[in-house]
Length: 263
Length: 231
Image (cartoon, each protein chain N blue to C red):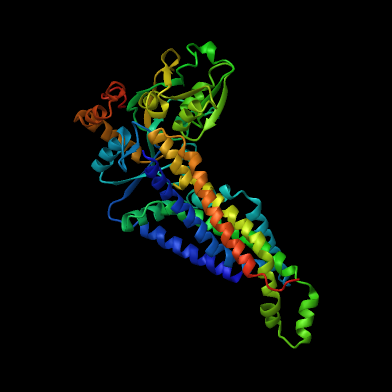
């Protein structure tokens, strides 16, 4: 027991040391939480890129911070924010929706201005014969746990919901026939369906949700929200956002005018 | 991606699994010994505190313990230790994931130490009282009896249950992906999302099978080597 206590104390000391060291770097580092999916945050040739990645880098560079991107489990995003593991969720975070506990996301985190439009879409196998809402009755939906898609799936009658940990896992559920359809972000669905192992998947356009918005989520009361908002307006004006949007082919859904959101 | 590329990519994740395996074994196995002695202590308070500790650690799912070590410092004390460790190693040494590796290692080492301690205790208590008495009659001291008579039989007896735990350990390392530590199964998941490859997920089983195969042979050899005191 003595050895155990000694070991634990050494460990605590070590940890305290690290806690001190971490704060000593000249430039403060912002940790951005993300999950991997194209075209927002994804890896190509070992490098993290994507619309959200590039925009986050541009914003925090202007604010004088270093940025570090931390992979998170989407389901744990609120715990990650509250525990300080990350400073913000910048990952196609749909802001005007409720979680499955019925609480609006805007009540749990502080959101920046909306920077992109999004919809929830239904993805099916090409030979599934699903074309209208009535076809979904009695079917199983693969959704990402805690996502806006999960919320949308619950609005259809007679649908069994199966939770996955990542949106991309939902695609695998459909290809492997463990689910009949997936409910996903339009941005993601468009960039995956019809490619590689997902060649036999397609989006049912008639069943898409109403328009939703992406925003950046911060811990409640964070002073970063206002700073980032300011930068979004600035980067929209000088054309940086447009340039990034063109690079990732998401220009038609990107918001370039923040005038009506600035209070 | 070719088969070779996939294998190398997965191997990168399996290295982390092996790291967790090795460190847990190296820290957990010795740490189990003092815990075992404390739980057999004649000093009652120490004995019961240790028993409660072992009960808590064995009674809570390992995944939850990983979450506790990862999140609790930030949530309760407002000191995001894992974040600071991570940034420290990334900025100074360019090593990724340390902020997740350390909480995982701490959780694993403590958890397995408790399981090991119970195996040690079972082994030590299985030696009959008559052997101690015989030793004392021959004029050996208490520590001589333990080292020369008891311990040798204990080691032999605990090899099979220890082998069991060791084999379970390598598979438990997969739990680390609950806080996004990129061990082999998470790596396979990344291939599914990045390259739309589904088969690597099942291919990961081969890595575990090969490693457990090696372990089985090695542990079998150890068991044979300890085959003294034929009864």
